[in-house]
Amino acid sequence: MRKQEIKKFNKTLSKNKLTIICAESITAGMLASTIASIPGASSILKGSIVTYDRELKSAVLKVNPATIDKHSAESLETTIEMVYGLMKLYPSSDLYVAVTGIASPGTEKYPVIGEVGDIFVAVYYKHLKPEFRLQTYSTRIASSERNKIREEAVRFIFAKVSELVS
Image 1 (cartoon, rainbow, N blue to C red):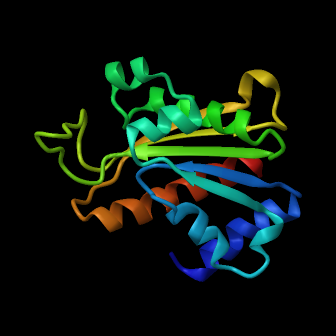
Image 2: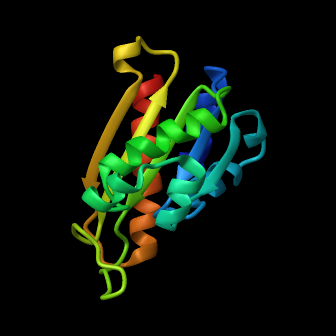
């Protein structure tokens, strides 16, 4: 991402005195790393937990294994449970973001449900009315290059969070 995009995102959160914490799967830390690439990020970024593995999603974020079995580790349902698990772990942030998705085809050992480029995002924003606090998004990024998918997922999250807090 271009520095201008990152600066704009960080400034949006900073001017609104908001903090953010992330639970990342497909982006594997890229979301937090992108936010932190600009000086002053410590005023908005609380941290990030990378739960790439399904067992870690359950152990750390308390995602129900039945949800993963039914919908997959890369699904909107799993992502929603990730964001709620993140809130329980760290209740004092303003924004919680969870992201999963598919960056490459499945394997015999690890089959995936869905298409390469599918991205699932859950954002919980404490300062909205209760019925609007949880926002969910899904998109398909038209690429077969895994790092391009991950980068575009970060850009997608930046856009959705910016819309939500503006």
